[in-house]
Amino acid sequence: MRLRQRIAHRQRSRRASDALLALPLSLIAVIVLVDVLTPHGLPLGPSLLIVAPALTASFASTLVTGAIAAVAVAGMLVIGVEREHLLDTMYFDSQIIALVVVSVIVTVFRYLRERHSRELAQVRTVSEAAQRVVLRPLPRRIGPLRVASMYLAAQEQALIGGDLYAAVRTASGTRLIIGDAMGKGLTAIGDASLLLGAFRAAAHRQATLPDLMAYLDQSVCWNLAEPTEAEQAGECFITAAVIDIPDEPSMVQMVTCGHPPPLLLCDQQVTTLRAARPAPPLGLGELTESDYHVDTFALGPRDVLLLHTDGVAEARNSRGVFYPLAERAAAWTQERPSALVRHLRADLLAHVGGHLADDAAVIAVQRTNAPAPSPPPDQ
Image (cartoon, rainbow, N blue to C red):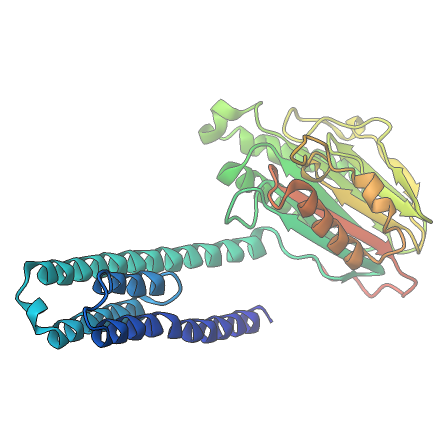
C-alpha cells in the first residue's frame, strides 16, 4: 500500500511539473517576441530571460532546468540576430555571458539539491527498515484485544527514537510494554532496542510480572555496565510500564517503573491508574522480584486502556501549556482504539504547532467479546 502511494505521489508530481513548464517557456516566448516586434526593443528584455531557468529550478529536474537554460540562451541569440547592431556590442556580449554563467550556476545548484534529496530518501528508507525491526507495528487485533498505536519522533527526518512499545502473546493472555529511554539519538534507540529484545524474549516465559521486571532490569543494567558505556552507567535509565491482560475477563495486572500512569476510559469517565508503589526506572539498580508491586484493575469490554509516554503529557504549546491528555481523551471515550489514536495524533500536533520537543508514543487497547485464538509464540 505504501509503495502504491509513493508511485501515485510521483505521478502527480510529474504531471504538476509538466504543467508548470508552460510558465518559463511562455516567459521566454513573450520576452523574445516583444523585444523583436518592438521598434527599439525592451531595455531589460534580454536580461529578464534569466528568470526562466531560475524559475524552472524550483520545480523541475536538473535536465529540464538545463534545457530551459539552453532555450533562454537561444532566445537571447534570436534577439541578437534580429537586431544585428547588438551582435557587435560589448553590452550584448556581457548579457550572453551573464545568462550562460547564471544558467550554469542554477543548473549546478539544482543538481546538488537533487543529490541531497536522493541521499535523504535513502536515509529515510534505512530508517523505515530500522523502525520495522526495532519497533514492530502492533497488529490491530491481538487475541481478544483491539489495539491501535502511534509513534511520533521529535528529531526531524527521524521515525524512531527512545520511546518504545511491544506486545507479546502468552499462554493465558497478552503482555504489553511501553517505555521511554533517557536521552535522544542513537544511544536512546540502542537502549530501547535492547529492552524490546529482552521483553520479547522473556515476556512469555516469566511466570509473573515481578519476575519479568527483575529480568528486564538486569538486562538493562548488564548493558549499561559494558566497557563502552562505563562512563554513562548510573546516568542512563528507561522508564517502563508492563501490563498483563488475560484473555478471560478478570483483573488486569500492571507494574510501573517510573513511567507515567495509563488512563482508563470508561463511560465518558477518565481514570488515572496511578501505581500504589511504583518501582524506580530500569537500569538504576538491580532489583529483585520482591521490589516490584503489582497493581490490579478491571478492564471491561467497552473500556479503553490508554498507555502513553511523557512526550504526550508534557508536550507544550507556544504559551508553555502542557497538553491536557486526560481532558482531551474524555471527549473520545466512546471511540474505538483506532479512532481514538487518530484523534489524539491530530489534536496533539495541533497543540504543539506541528513539532514535538520529545518523542511521543501511545497505545490504545480495548477488550472485545470475540473468543481468543490460540496464541502464537510471539508478536
